[in-house]
Length: 276
Image (tube, rainbow, N blue to C red; front, side):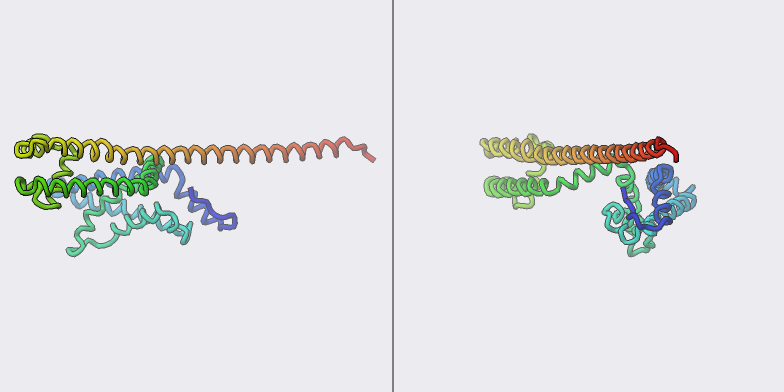
């Protein structure tokens, strides 16, 4: 949650409180979902022919509200608005929608669906999941490098051994990599790839079994393990932060109570003094 500095103007605080109020945020979430439904309806030619203008009018109205929300937040936070990656993401998504979709930029019309991704920033549980996934990227990079090594080694072996007899599957490294990816996903790997190869190379099953054990059951599960570990760490950090905030709040309340008790004691002491 964004916090203004103590010397921030009152009007900035009021704008921030208004935009981030539960009512406004729930309304924004509703508009995001409604906008997603409208964009889906626009893919139907019959619906567009009947109520296309009405859909476009509502779409422009929703975009206007999204733009107003961002303008208010920028007015409230100033340049600090762009220090929040989620705010930058919202800004880019809405900015893309504001660019006129000419013939040369017709792809921008399809990119309007990116507004649905704003739900990630509005729903706290989604934001925590995505933050956990982003924090797992360094670990995923190591796992991805490992699987590239496995693919390269297996690809060279398969191309050299099976390429002459099965050029469509193993004729060159690019074809081999695609075939190995099919085998890794277990998509008809037995009847479509392994068994035809085994008719020419009876011991080819050793290669395919070892590749599946390493690439599918080990490396792919490492991806899952890294993501789960990152999400768990992120959840523990959030729990720790909430506990710290709760402890700080209790400490502040205790200080306030001590101050009130001290003032009450002073008042009683003054009241108990004999009148001259």
